[in-house]
Length: 290
Image 1 (cartoon, helix red, strand yellow):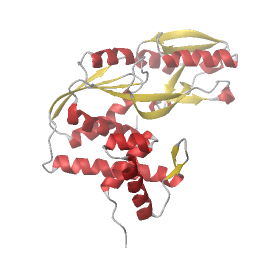
Image 2 (cartoon, rainbow, N blue to C red; image 1 turned 45 degrees about the horizontal axis):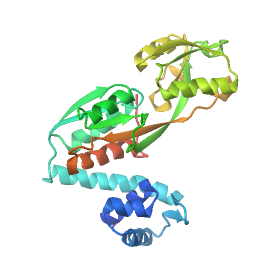
Image 3 (cartoon, rainbow, N blue to C red; image 1 turned 90 degrees about the vertical axis):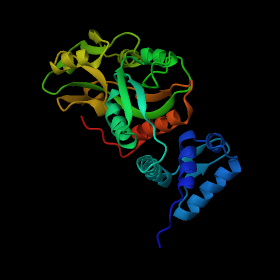
Image 4 (cartoon, helix red, strand yellow; image 1 turned 30 degrees about the vertical axis):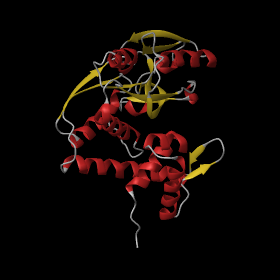
């Protein structure tokens, strides 16, 4: 007989998995650590698998735990959706979401999720650079900011990591030029700095041919075959190809995407919305098409 999964146990499991700590998970859930540990043991007994590897310093997911995490998130999200749609507490009114240019590809799954779960929301979207969005958040003119740079702020919630890659037009030879013409974001972007540092360390000659504050300007230069750029791999158009070490391009760091929420007068509604936004972005089954 198939066992039934307790949503409270799944909620504890997700909290431990995301915080990598039984203590922090207990704080988030408003419970003592021993109670959370017992919940995890009950869930492991129900599933007949081990979800975590534990020692005195760290808590890490097992392979089975990693597989289970996606299911747990989706089950909790479906529960929230059912409650919202069948007469649970309604969230309505204006909601202001900011997304940096690099993180804006996540808006599609986020907005789709919010539209289903909270059909009475009136959503305003702002796309800008990370520090401008965080300034707006502090000024209470945004409720959430999805950014790729913390800009000295604390409290950002990691919601996704994506490979940053080199890219060029498929039918052009800019990648073979010496020096390589680069199209990068304007000064202040950490990924611009990372790209230039990687080329310097690798000893690959380059020149900064194009610079822009948004991806539209960069895309025009790259699509025309005039330059090589860096981009989140998930956002590449079919007209672009990834360049790697075989073509002489050094590895780049991952893009860490963070969710910041307005702290002043947030309350439970914003907490619920933050969880939905994070779940939309973190779901391993997410398949963003472009």
